Image 1 (tube, rainbow, N blue to C red):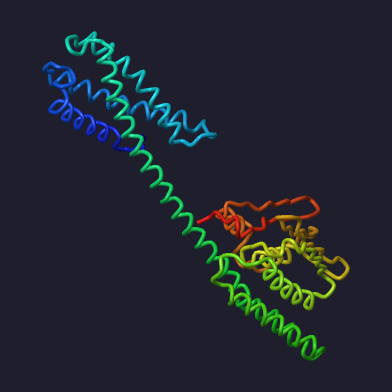
Image 2 (tube, rainbow, N blue to C red):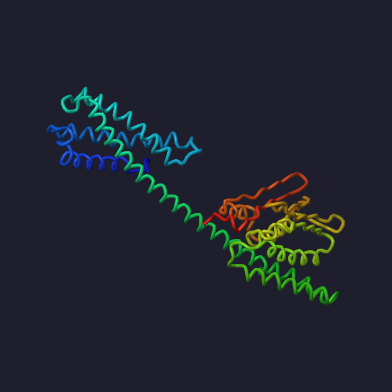
Length: 340
């Protein structure tokens, strides 16, 4: 708050209000004499501007270097020390310049300290309201962005299965299978329908159980295995302990799709993909066989997945080594959810 563009006007307004309050209500009682209005006004205005300047200095040059304590506590604590020093200097300087009832004394120092401390408390209270108001706005923006990212991911995931490329590839495969192996064609069609059903049923969910996501992934892997036979080798090893955790929907499928999109594979040079879990982490590993020309892209990638996890206060780990590529995803416990 203290670096707001209207900070001087706000501090000056507070000084004017304080002057009117003290001069017409408290001045005679506190000093037991008639105080000259102009020197009193200048003194109060300078004190208010000085208290603001102290807090502005703390906010701009000290808070950014302090991370172990709450910024509001640091701001108020250092501000309180600063106004005590300010009160002493003010009593000394005003006593030397103005004399009379403004001369330095313990009573004047205590009155000045009480006044500046009250101003500091008021300013820090307003600053706390401003601080939490800005945090609330920031969280609202982040929540909207998370909602947008999740909706985008679901929409693009759905569209990736509904686009002409997906239809053409799967209908072509199904057409060949009908003539070659009716039973396999029927299995392929069932897997395809289960994929559509899962996407439609979970298009409104933020998170799903890992065991549900794995069922969906297995159907997708079955389609790939039928289409590409021995050219793709998947090894899925998930601990039973991990099955009750949560994960954003379609993330695993998108990562596998990303692997298939960026790597070549043949029966002589099959592509190895390993999906495994260990504790609260799930990894997707593949041997790198990069394509010279990348296939059609759905437009959703690792950055989107990373952003979706970031808004859950979590982070994915990407290991882009020379011979392999690996992505690690955190598994989420519904008892420990802290995001809005």
